[in-house]
Every structure is written in structure tokens, then in C-alpha cells.
Image: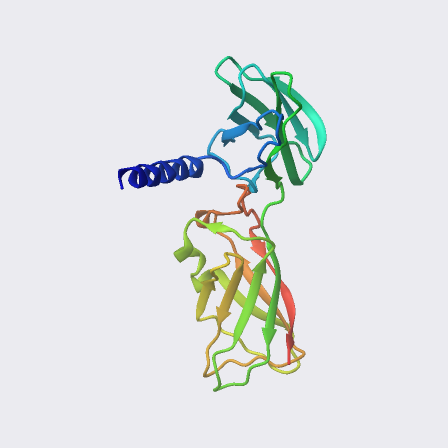
Length: 252
């Protein structure tokens, strides 16, 4: 019974330790192959990153890891050898990379070679470089007659965003709907603004008693941004458009 309890404790402990490491991928070594290195932390100077996180350009990312003592650590970028470093007597290594102006997903692969054994498999970690600020991409609306359900208009950001002051962002006074080409007589008065759970979709709700959206009419959403809203994307790029005017046609 004691042996079972000890085994369970060790299993839980190892699971907790593994959960503290960044979520890169490591393949178990083949027989007579160097043990693959492990990444302990990947830090951009402000936060520890997880594989797949986004950063801006000009950010120096420091990879800290461990492997066999006095091993050669090779660093591959998108499958091509980029650089190398070595572990110390304790098996620790540090390597840094600075993002450029090219956007995209960068896959880093770390291998180890030591003790006359063949080079290990790769331990991979992905970083997304994003230098494009978020912006309102489009809007959509569906025809809705008066005295039915409250009409809605949906506005989309180009990517998920974080909003520092959601209450301010969802204040109807910062939003407006105009009708530059509305032969059908669409009318829309914003009564409610809601940021969706996807942090990318914004739903504008009109007045069910007086408003209507007529198919074929062209509507324009006007968003007046306040810096106090503090809108930014996952990489930290700030929304910086003072006024946005997404335009769309009302669908049947």
C-alpha cells in the first residue's frame, strides 16, 4: 500500500513540474541518441511565452533550457540551421533571438549533441510575429421589420483584441449608424453595444419599436475611439484609428 502511495505522489509531482515548462514539443530519444534539450522558460522581457504566442517586431526573446552537460545545442528556424550554443557543466543554456519586421509564424527547433552520440530530435517552440495594429474590418446586417425583434448589426475586428475599459467601449455614445444610401428607409438607433466572447465580434442592438433594416440599403457604422479604451491585440499592437467607418449592405 505504501509503495502505491509513493508511486502516486511521484507521478503527481512529475506532472506538476512538467506543467511549469513552456508548451513546446519534444520527441523521446531513439536508442543511442542524445537526449533532446528541454526549454525551461521563453521570455520576451515582460512575460513568459507559451508556444504560439504573439510578439511585436524588435522584441528580444530569451530561451533558457537544459540538456546534457557540455553539449552542442543547435537552433533551427523553420527547419534550417540558424545558430548554435553550448550547455555548461550543469547542462544549462541560454540563447536569444530578436524579432524583425517580417510577420508570420516562426518555428524554432532545439537539438543537442553530446557524448559521441548522434544529434537529438528537435524540441520545438513557435512564435508569431505580428506588427499590424487591430482595426475594424467589416460589418454585416440582416433585414428586420419594425415591431419585431430588435435589429442588430455585427462589426468585426480583423483579429481578437483585448479591451482595457470594456464599459467605456460598450457605451453607445461612441458608436453611431448612418445610412448613406438607403432608398428603403432603414433606421437604426443604437441602444446596446456588446463585445462578443471571441473578443473580435461587436454586436450593435437597435430599438425594436422604431428601427428597421431594409434589404439593399447601405449602412455605415461610425466608431469614435478613445485611447482610454486601451484596445490592443495579442502581440500588444495598439488600436490607433481615431474614427472607423465600416460599411455594409443589408442582406435579406
